[in-house]
Image 1 (cartoon, rainbow, N blue to C red):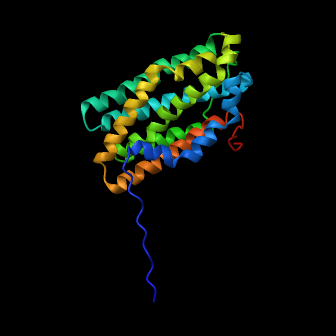
Image 2: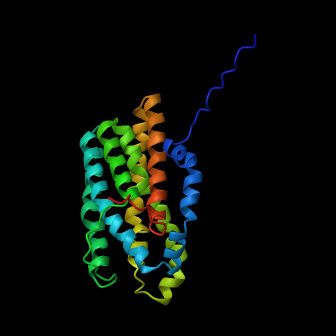
Image 3: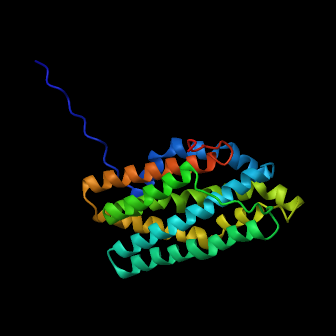
Length: 239
């Protein structure tokens, strides 16, 4: 009788966040190739799609800020907690102020309609809140990282794509969003978030690290869905 051969998974010796990035390459490539981001970068995105994105992102940031605040409360030591708490405050004030400025400053026309979260927005926020609340700190930290990291990389790429469009029209309505996420201070926050997730992974158990990888992957899927639904809307079932 031939006994089955057990193959052990390869041991990863680099930074844990590098592993997270590598394992989600297919999803991140799909993000990079989204029509929404391409048209945002070259200035051809319809205003109604940009409005939908900005409105949903404002709702998302309110929920994301709460998830970061919960993560701060679960942090293993004060300095780590202070970073997540500061990030929560930034999401709740500075970035939401940017969104409100776009919606009320004449860039996008007023509609007066009550905005409800899309399925992707509500799903993403609910997932982050549940994960941070019910899973170990390390898993929650991995779950919130894609919003930092992927947004920063998208912003860096968009800044390059949008250079010509912004030079031709500095008042282009998408310019403020692009420059915000390519800001050096934002990239510095991403670097700190990565360091904290790496530190959490070092202190975590094997099963917790597996859960961190799963959480980062699920959040990356939501990143892809969130952007894609700005052009390809997901409708709630009729009530």
